[in-house]
Image 1 (spheres, rainbow, N blue to C red):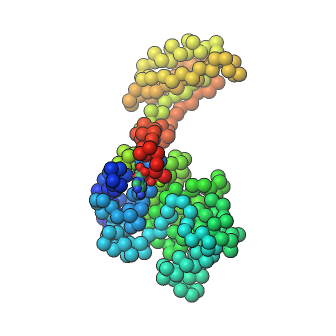
Image 2 (tube, helix red, strand yellow):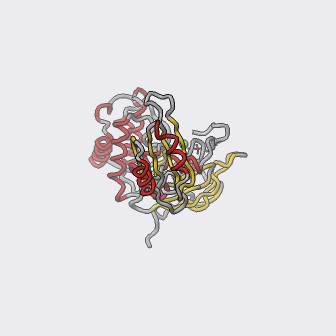
Image 3 (cartoon, rainbow, N blue to C red):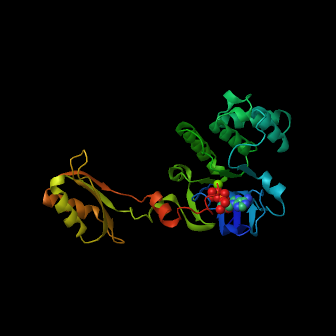
Length: 327
Ligand SMILES: Nc1ncnc2c1ncn2[C@@H]1O[C@H](COP(=O)(O)OP(=O)(O)O)[C@@H](O)[C@H]1O
Ligand SMILES: [Mg+2]
């Protein structure tokens, strides 16, 4: 087995009494896009700052492409691109000046430097604002300047803290497509609290809560832990609502029923009933058979699949931060 590009062991950070990161271990291989999920204050940004060598850990180690970040941060940073939270520093510079500056710091010279900047500008679609000072750019463009500097040296490891934060839906789509296009040859970690992003670009997701890993798997594996996995939702007319409630809840294999009553609303009554299976039970055939047998007027009958949102809510705390101070 070749070494993973990112290898993290027992990583922890305390700020005085606050345990921001409480000992996390994981590794990321080439070809993986890891979604780093968690509520505000969970410890995502702090973990990323330690991975990239911008914050010294209280305990634990990070290896990037075999470089020990604590002992050789310069070597490790050569292997990494980092999109920090918020806007890039040097707001008085234009993107053109800023990217040339970053390229020079990265060791590019002459035509090679021009080429590296041009490719990054093209991939992040920055051409139209190249000569306007960064301070005056919209949040979306600022974010893309940050992404451009992160990918400038085409590093094997990318660490991106909420890359689509502040982007409009089209820009979000473009950034996700860019990340997906780079995924094959790199190990990428993106933090996000947008769950659809995980389905869109991540091959794997880790959920952290209060500094600790509470789930780790493919998006499909995580969603399968949702109570909506294999659940069935049926929408019945008002005349059948009462009978359907009773009969469906009593079906063998039904563990629980969620009843969103439509009584009195403009759709003329009726009920939306979601049936949650007992472990290992399939309900869709039984439910549709019962519907046919009773002749209920059904507006819709849906076989649900697991919802990542549901899993996220189940394994994280609503306010993981310490008074919500963290971002
Ligand atoms: N420099 C700091 N000093 C004190 N507390 C901090 C500092 N940075 C982060 N924290 C705290 O650490 C916790 C994790 O923050 P952070 O890593 O920013 O979370 P996330 O990125 O998941 O929202 C929060 O409680 C936050 O208030
Ligand atoms: Mg953060």
